[in-house]
Image 1 (cartoon, rainbow, N blue to C red):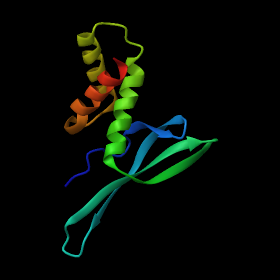
Image 2 (tube, rainbow, N blue to C red):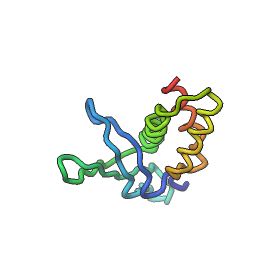
Image 3 (cartoon, rainbow, N blue to C red):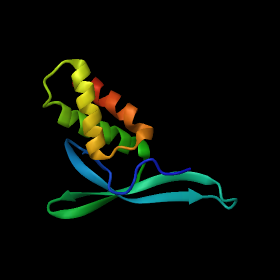
Image 4 (cartoon, rainbow, N blue to C red):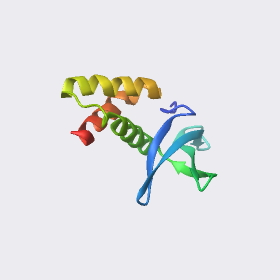
Length: 115
């Protein structure tokens, strides 16, 4: 099973009351003794007080939600009918390099949170 998000993917993650722009830095896979994939997870970094902080054990659902939140944040500036906002959301997803396997879910999440 391949990782859904490439290294370098940016997403918003909530740490307490603030949202940080995080970047995926590592893709990790845990396998059992038979070579079967047990779990996949990521490492990501975000700046805090000028120093990079690394989050270990980030799952792909967190990144997918964060990519949707990042699209929604940029979409809030678009003031147009829903169909044009969807097109704008898809363009933002293209600019962010969102993988096609999760693009629809991220765009739908962004449309839902900004409606």
